[in-house]
Amino acid sequence: MPIEQIYNSLNEELNHVERELKFQISLILKNKRNLKKIIDYFFKIPGKRLRPILVLLSAGLIKGDQIKNNKTLIELASAVELIHSASLIHDDIIDDSNFRRGQLTMNYQYKNKIAVLAGDMLYSHAFSLLIDKFDKRILTILSQSVERMCSGEIGQLKVPISSFEEYLKIIEDKTASFMSTCCQSAAILVDSDEKTVKTLGKFGFNFGISYQLLDDYLDNDATFNFNINLFEKAKEYGKRAQVTIASFENSKYKNSLYNLITYLFEKDKINNSKLMNVSVK
Image 1 (cartoon, rainbow, N blue to C red):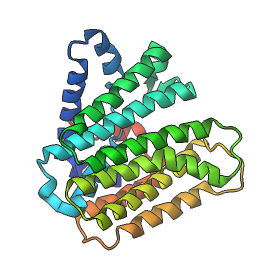
Image 2 (spheres, rainbow, N blue to C red):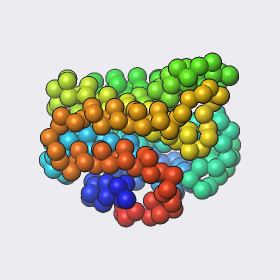
Image 3 (cartoon, rainbow, N blue to C red):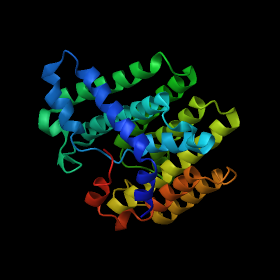
Image 4 (cartoon, one colour):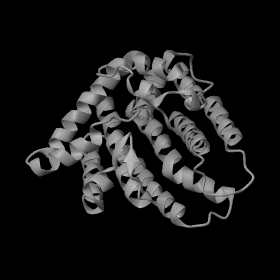
């Protein structure tokens, strides 16, 4: 299964990310014992770490195995996971969701006011982690991406969605822009030229659209009733993502980025509990 191969190939780096996340969470909770139970609750069941994986693979596509033991890269991967986590907490409040990753959402467990503030803390800490040691361009595109995610959420609250193009703009803002930023940030971090940064940004953008289209297709969660085949559209954007990085030198990192796209179209066959048991310690 391609996704397992990706996890296994990045096992060492993802282990570092997990340790860094725990360290950053401990900094958030320093002298705030009353918050420990709340923050620990959200992180008790980990996600797929897809955004950190995009960071690691994008850097590896350019620098190969030179990315190993790159502490700054691990910090970037951890920061984007904190930002993603904050966005999920806020999404659950907006959508009035009651379950995520097999447990009650934070807003249902601790109520909306606490959940909003917990999400704000994660956002704030992620940027405090980045502000002193990262290229200003990374901070700029991450900030812009968070703005777009908020804009996408507002757009989704408008009902009904009047066209497929409007729906597409929402998922561009909510999902694709941040995945694009993960790839661009990694490229900037490893001193890539502007063309390479933009190319990886396009990969992440098309991958993100494909990811969200397919997710909505599988969950029957599209917010419109137009005669559009979401599965075929998702394949179209997945192909665009593949074409974007075709000119890069062949490597395990390039193969893994291709395999991420293959994984999208096997999602309906994957047992999520098995995926969560992939060895990342």
